[in-house]
Image (cartoon, rainbow, N blue to C red; front, side, top):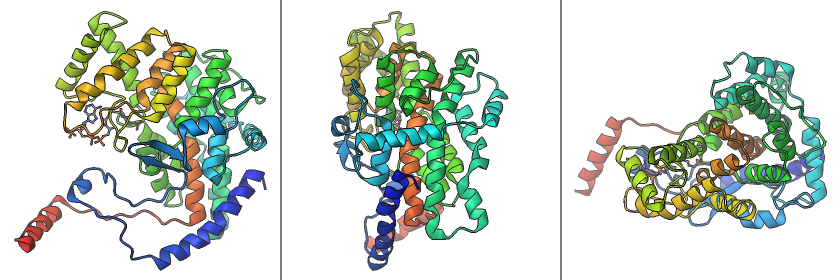
Length: 441
Ligand code: CMX
């Protein structure tokens, strides 16, 4: 058994027994209420999911196992000379609750490298798609196409005991995480670089090898950006659409391939992960329409107003939970300030940051006028020459695998149930509202 798997079992299995007793003892405890607006409003804030890997505070942002992004930047192991943590470390942390040592991270990195060979048929499946098929479609299909590799499915067919489900789920999760960079890079090169692929370098770390296979820039700086990017996009507690979709699908005992493909399909929506593509598209259209690559703040404000007047959202702004600028935005801004503070497009992003919250703040219905993670990432990638913005959400997806697959291992270790909330019709709600008024009256 590999060291991380052993540590996970040591942490998760005792908690699983404790958790069952805890639920039994407190089964009737009321943890919240559900208002009619929440039933119609995407279940916002309804406490009905268990997620161990991270927690989102509206005024503080994401904490991975209690650690904020600035804390993780200091505490997670880094390669010598790099400023950014290795994303393998955040996976280790989410899975075990412990900050790993450098040796533990390097051992996980090696483990992933050993699992990283992608079956040849996956590339053949991808090659059947027209090259202009959206990269997220290709990514989701490639993941699903690997489902016959599932160890969970094989073991289930053999008749595995419920208490052992976590074991093959761990194996599938690591196998999948290990292979995603090569699959994503393959999609990038076939879609935008005439199918000129770059062979993996198994001596590199997970993110460094990904940067290498993308072939955008040979610089250590781009590898460093990928380490930052893949760390900060990894998780955002359990209720966000990609995490919840993965969890929901997994709750039926679908394996990691089925489940993560579901998560990727949710991430592909413009209100979620696709917003990183939409942000840069919106900025490029703004520059085109105004006729300058460096619009001033008055021009930016007018463009924001015209977007809102057209009944569209300002991509990269607003959030379902956060009520402050997203610390993941700030982390990317700090990176850009350190390495390329003069970049013209990045400066447009910073000017939008100065203008948009004021304009959005004038609309009482918009609960957060602040930038989210997607407001910055495109401009940073553009700086290194990755101009093909239709690919950006795939990068988000590679990172999101770390959080949602760590959670899936926990789901199976804790023996969480199949999801089955109650739905009601509008008619039921109308009658319920009328009866409630009668009772009050
Ligand atoms: N621009 C314009 N209108 C916005 C807005 C924005 N950036 N953010 C919210 N609103 C609007 C909503 O569309 C909604 O309008 P209606 O009542 O007419 O439907 C109203 O304000 C209330 O929304 P909210 O409660 O503030 O936000 P929600 O929880 O409903 O939605 C989100 C959150 C992220 C979908 C929304 O802020 C949005 O559409 N933002 C732009 C897209 C985006 O950046 N998504 C990425 C989020 C991060 C991620 O998951 O990657």
